[in-house]
Image 1: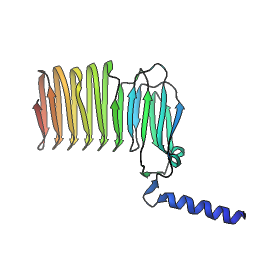
Image 2 (image 1 turned 180 degrees about the horizontal axis):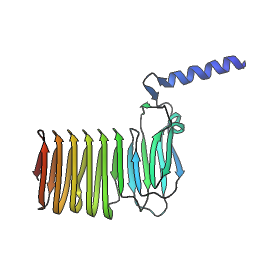
Image 3 (image 1 turned 45 degrees about the vertical axis):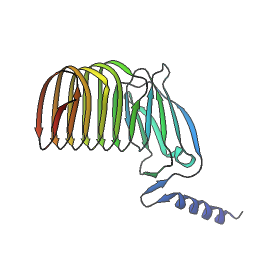
Image 4 (image 1 turned 180 degrees about the vertical axis):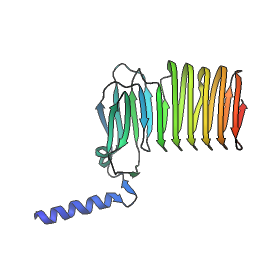
Length: 216
């Protein structure tokens, strides 16, 4: 095939898979396994569903459209596993994007955007922290002595099955936090967010706006 024609076809294929708003998922759904260094924190920065399992060997498996794998980076920086796209790339639409992470050390979780994190094997840690920046969701289960949750935006933290001795939670925006606390709960809300709690902790709340703190 003439080289110039080949290059033109390659360019057309690339443009078809992209739009001015980002890259579309194309082709079959395939799974890719990646090795990784040990990490104690997770940071999801793409619109994916991330499932967390317990295991002694840190591992990452990604299931998505065949053409998207090369744009997804998984790197460990200062003990934090970052899952993000390559610079200047935005995944606009994926038919399916699921990520399966295995670790027995992770206790800090962050979402930027609209992703989802679900803890499948319940945690049992001294302290745990969760942060949502955007409209993402986190589903947590397990137990901890000290819990910290921050929601910036409209995200939701579902922690009915995550028991804490003490908890400090904060919402900036319209997000929701659901938690189970035994001893003390400190809740700060700026906006219309809502904190719902299970248990009988001593509650300290500070609200600016129409937010609510409510016992379930």
